[in-house]
Length: 139
Figure 1 (cartoon, one colour):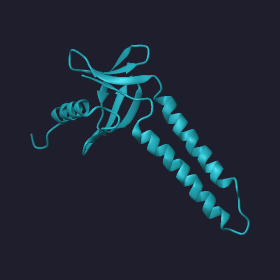
Figure 2 (tube, one colour):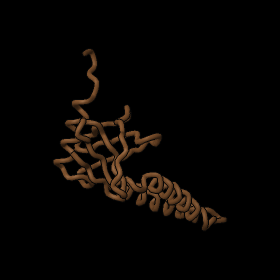
Figure 3 (cartoon, one colour):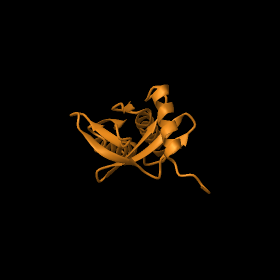
């Protein structure tokens, strides 16, 4: 099984849209005061854009996840190399989407995968694998 990760997931695009909305609301509220600060919304937008850029930069190079022949997870990079990975505790199944946390080397990575990011069949297969690998309570 191999899951291809888009450069900009739906969660990243939603975060960018919310950053713009936040800046617009701050500008609107600031303009109501007697001494408006026209740069306040732009400053918040710059901070949020910097944070999004940093998060994207940390995820740069990762093109997907794969399960190797031995059943272990691999993080696949742009150059075709793969790094052994492990699925971490914070992974959650959220309806038809998956919030996936994994460690590749020393870095912890996170992605919220939705049906708009990954084909439904692959997402379903990922959910089944995660559910099968999850520890059972009381077992």
